[in-house]
Image 1 (cartoon, rainbow, N blue to C red):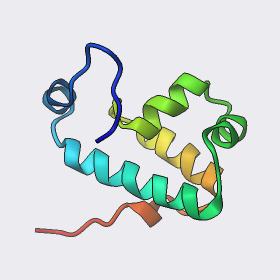
Image 2 (image 1 turned 90 degrees about the vertical axis):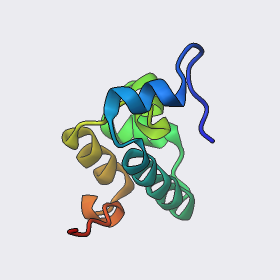
Image 3 (image 1 turned 30 degrees about the horizontal axis):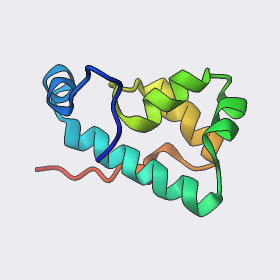
Length: 90
């Protein structure tokens, strides 16, 4: 389970953002790619020019990350943004 800021619960995040499991899946895939490529948070900060806190919020999944932020992280990881979106139609 991911670590949240004090006072923020997973239930509160899910209520605010709707489909938390989708966000969690994206974050899990980002973590896998980071591990494979040995890219640490500081590398993403340097490559995106986001603050350390912004990167932590994106990677921890406590924010409903914007598409432009996902694209910036994808560029920092040197992958196509679709590499961690496994979308299927129902």
